[in-house]
Amino acid sequence: MAAKGLLAAQPRREQHDQARAVLGAGLTTAAVKEAIGRTAARMYPAEAARARLKEAAKAAEPPAKTAWGHARDGAAAFGHSVTGFFANLFSN
Image (cartoon, rainbow, N blue to C red; front, side, top):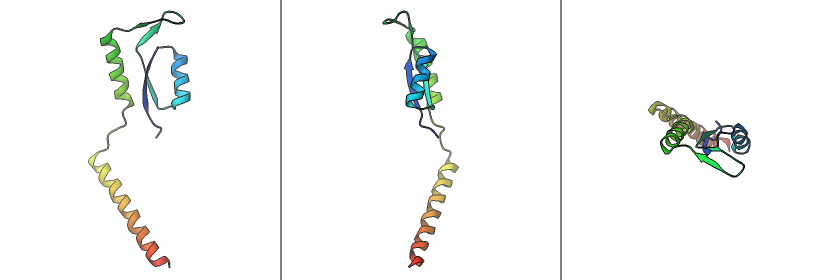
């Protein structure tokens, strides 16, 4: 799975695409301001920006593992370590 992250920026598609090219395809973006000129931007209202950021942050979160997922991974790791132990023990 690709690393995920969150970037808050202007809603211009080129900026989001450029950020994804540099930081990875797993990047989630959230527009919090709008360009009104080459050097000026209009911020979205705080409530709207906050809602966009919360929504994007939730989308960027990796899915939580279930208890079964943790148990399965632990059992698999233990099995590999036991196999490795006996392989090393009897290989000489």
